[in-house]
Length: 228
Image (cartoon, rainbow, N blue to C red; front, side, top):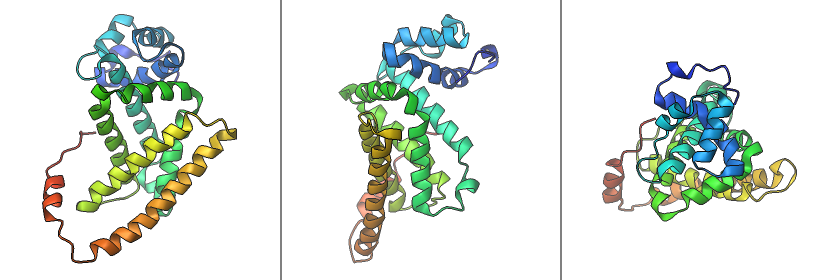
């Protein structure tokens, strides 16, 4: 991301975090997700390092690394929404919509796959797992909403949980994929999505039977995922 002409003084801290995130990811390839990467990104972008530190104070669960990774994921979420709004996806089948959105995310980080590898390692640390799960859920929710999903019942939660799992598994393949154009990763994604389509059919048959699921549904209904 070329942020050299950006006026950071006019940004909120939330906007600044997202604006710096791609440059931080580029620096994290070499330096890891740490203050060195933050300061290198600030220099690259022409941002005052003190302002950059203010945007990423390193407080809370996961500290500085998770703050920067969350900002990067947010930047990918926003780029995906801008490139693939719901009206553009409407002409595609549901399966194609989800594949298209996940593929966009993979392409968006294809040049910084080492940063992805390092980010996955950070998110896998026990103290970061709850926050990482929330981020995965949030991205899955955005994808389903762009794909036109309006379910508010049990399906709302299962769809997002399954997609978050597929995306996480696909990233694990992605960071080790040395095939041309990450062809193996995209093939893996296609197989997983196909598996979900079969699962949805089986689930519909299962839920069509006289099964008792009200207590779980009430519990899920009380959950609140992070605001976008």
